[in-house]
Image 1 (cartoon, rainbow, N blue to C red):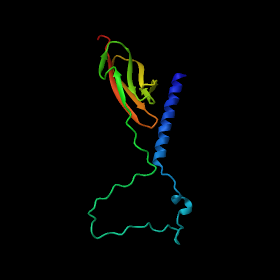
Image 2: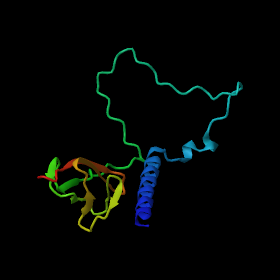
Image 3: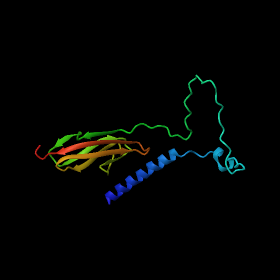
Image 4: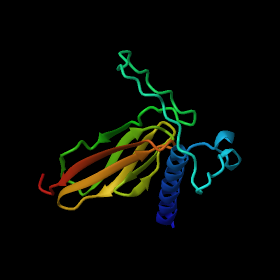
Amino acid sequence: MKKCIKSINIVFLIILVMFQAACAASPAISPASSPANIPPAGPTGSLPPPATQPVSAQPDKTPNPPPPAASNSIPPTAQLSLAIIDPLDESIVGISNVVISGKTAPEAVVSVNGEVVDVDASGKFAAPVTLDEGPNTFDIIATDLDGNEAAKQIVISYDPLS
């Protein structure tokens, strides 16, 4: 049941991120672009040709100013942080059960190899994992509600003789 809820949370987060991206990519509809303001078709059934700017014989030597920002653009957000505290990447351990711990933003969702991990109010998380003998690779991903993502990959080697 717990895995099912975690899977639902991941699916919901992915849908939310995709929805936000789609909303940011689609232009806002203004009264100027509504169907009532589209010019009628010409006698051949086609729209009139688009307006063109006159071409100057002399190249303009003044630099062009940057285009204005779109009114429906989303302001950039701070990058999401993700730090793995323990164990360090390329660690060699002598026990098969370890806890991967780290810190990110408090509102972020963290997964370790696809399994959602609880994040506390200060952004700390801990994921117990079982290691196979030899190197074990773990992908840790943090995602916030704005769709920002931070990812780390660590390798922990289990050597029962160490």
